[in-house]
Length: 164
Image (cartoon, rainbow, N blue to C red; front, side):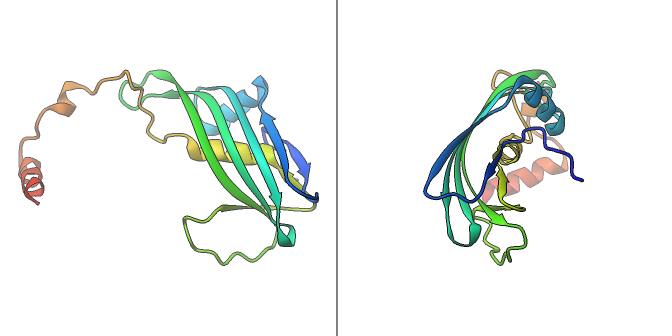
């Protein structure tokens, strides 16, 4: 049996017309998600979904994600608060639906089993995709060594590249 995700918001997949749903994480859910995402903290996470049913049990979900997270700056190695704001589109598809779309620009497909989709897990996955893998606090400055001109063999390569 698969464990329940940290942010679980199941809804019935079979419905008529368009529907909107909001997912707001509790403090405990934020703490569990922060551990899963390997970041110091998630202060808040909310996601607004606009759902539109399509043929074959496919559901188009357009979402707006907002989160306030604490990340570690890659320059200073100090924690800082970062605001994540992301608009996205995903398609929930019945499990076992053949997927023959290799276009990286197409909507992500999230399979679902039975007659429920999990908007909480979809929001958690979108947060994971939206997090900067190399977060940098805008207030941090690079060390002086990083801004000094290179010397040695790599400096010659940089001069060569600059002429192109």
